[in-house]
Length: 301
Picture (cartoon, rainbow, N blue to C red):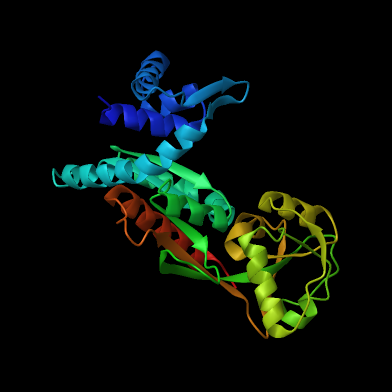
């Protein structure tokens, strides 16, 4: 008869797409994982995975199973975490998502603190575009996520931070004032994320509302790559201050405030309206938000 362990092993293997990675995440040996999945396939009379040079490829039947079992497993883990928490120590698994602009600067320190305070909680962090993170929370693959507030959203959302966009230029760029009107910024040659990126959508929204058009000379989704292009060339960029904080501090980029109007993004923590966020994920989010706010308070105008 199908049991919880088989369902758990199946879900992790589906998400990882690799026996090696799934076994490592479950902290078990690979043969034990393969045996449980084989037993599940035998009981169902259906093949769930196909081995390929890309790893374990899920069949259509596995995809249907995953969609059905993931919410059940998430609810079980939430209940388990709450019961363990009553014993005095938080335990369980936290699955959260973050945009790159947050993950690359805040995540390492936040995870270090969280792991020290809550050693019995395992963590999975997904870095992706806001749209993909919304899908992850909707499907149950993520407990919660911090995203750039979209125009339309069906998930439960709580504002965690408002952060300004700043203009960044490199040493080779012509000298600019410390403050520029948004109209002046739109006349510069910019390197920006592509339109698939939540930050670009926010910037386009600001431009449309002001009746301006951004002149994008280069599109790159990698924020570190954008920073390197600006450092080495004559293009400028518009990004949240937190995404470039270390480069500003090291003097590798110059920062300019944008005024008339000032540009700010709203970061929200999203969760499923019918699934409470499990205590481990809720606690991790609190630690992350605290670090985000501390980073913001450290930033100089």
